[in-house]
Amino acid sequence: TERYGPEMAGTILANRRGAIEDDGQAGQWVHTSSPGGGGSGNEHLSPLGECCLARHLATDYRLIATMLGDDEDEEGKAKRRGPRVTPVDGVHPTVSKACDWGDDDHREVCRSDLRSILLRHGTYLDATEGSCRVVLGMEMGGM
Image 1 (cartoon, helix red, strand yellow):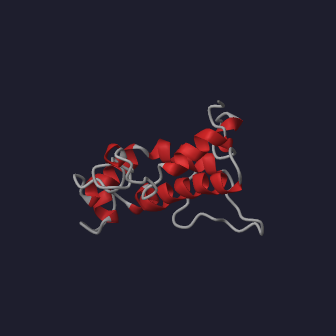
Image 2 (cartoon, helix red, strand yellow):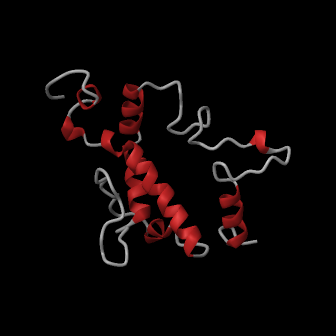
């Protein structure tokens, strides 16, 4: 089997949130966006903690933006909403092909998932807006 072939794409799609049927194994799988799943639904982090963590992982978010590349539709309009996250310069060209596998639906699901990550946390990444406390409205002023 190819590492990222149709079989792997099918497995990934089958394990998306809400897609697992109750076959006795459903309790084993927790989607990362679910509470306790390790994603943004983490009930242990305050909004301030989420902001600080996003800023700590800023390079990772920039790599996600690099994976998306230009991310434009057929008419040349940007598909990404929300804040602009600057891609990483000088990475290997294959990074921008992260979602170039499977059929059209698989590619769009991959790109949509990456866009979702940036949309949820991208607002925290612009340090020109000030500290996380300022961004969250906990204090006024600069950094």
